[in-house]
Image (cartoon, rainbow, N blue to C red; front, side, top):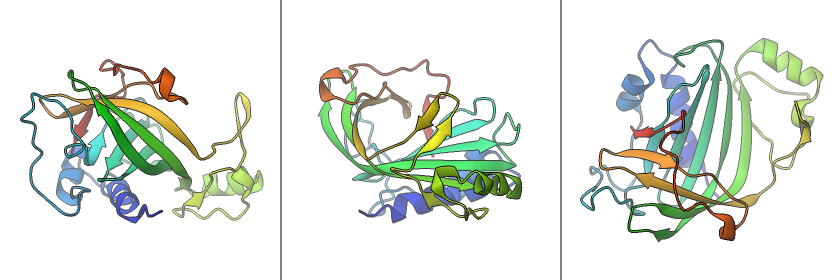
Length: 216
């Protein structure tokens, strides 16, 4: 299982948005399309209907409070990046933490209305902390079982318990049954993920405050 391309691009995105420009400006300059075999523009000739060929890319959501979500797709791999900032409601500077989840994915159906059914195989869950205060705190409590966190260095946290406000939690390898849709103006929205194919949603949520996601 290789996530090197998508993770490298996502981390490049993290570095770029800590500069003086907006996320859109920085990413446009520094992030290439994940589909490394082509730099051609996306074909949206099917009236906005997504196909497996036009899903690949980096998709950036809206900054909500101090949190920004980014999705990166290649032809077979996906990564979700959740970036948390220090009271920056524009998500431009003072990055505190990056959480990445990713694995392989498979498109199983494209409906007439353009809603894509896709199976996301989750195999990686990483955390990265960017300030020494956070590192010291999480080393003290042995967050995810680690006592050797280092600022700016990611650790694999799949199958490792951690504490939340609701108690002890753990993220395990699994398949998430998801939907997405790409509009005519090249925006992406997601439906709620499900743990079973039978309960997969048939719609997406264009009113989700974190989206829609725009291609970079």
